[in-house]
Image 1 (cartoon, helix red, strand yellow):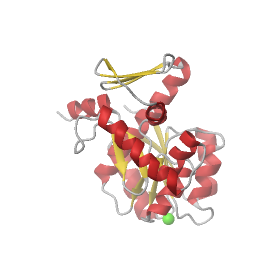
Image 2: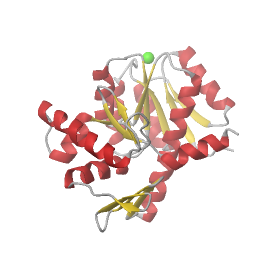
Image 3: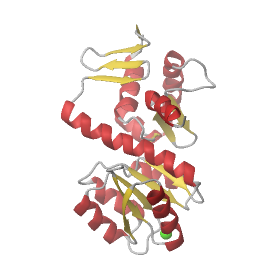
Image 4: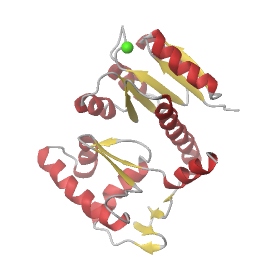
Length: 243
Ligand code: CA
């Protein structure tokens, strides 16, 4: 039995029904909203664990809904939109969305993204109570107090910039971070030159933590958009659950 509650915001009835039927079939509890105002109302009243949000709503733009929700809540938001341009994804992510799905989407993909977001939601709750000083993800470990990072028990020799990048990705695990978000957080500014430098630092960081350039285990690239740290152990668990 799933105790997590998902808020579905979608004005298009067939799409909304597809999503809610999928959730029902997989034993998820859900709430539905057909416009931006009711989405904000439901989100503030019921504090859902994850929000699935359409961007093209009849009253408010979905981007506005994200910005408003972010003023009081860190609940993971997955944008589901017909807008497929990179600039739209970037705008949604920079406004505070965690992930995006482009219509038309497969039900399997929706469920996979949802599982990631629900784990993120759960992890945030336990982190709030534990206030962890050590981060662990598969063979990767960061000790925030000593400022050291380890891979499979061996200390990594990272430059200060690589360490900063790794910590930023780790603290936002499961979430797609845009180039702008990363450069603003690491350099305090964002212009084209920063994005070019970011690619270089990211390449050197990956050389140190990934076993090969073709099989990224920890850092996923979203071409034209940004990067995301993947949850390694939970990927393994997910495979086991499928057996
Ligand atoms: Ca719509």
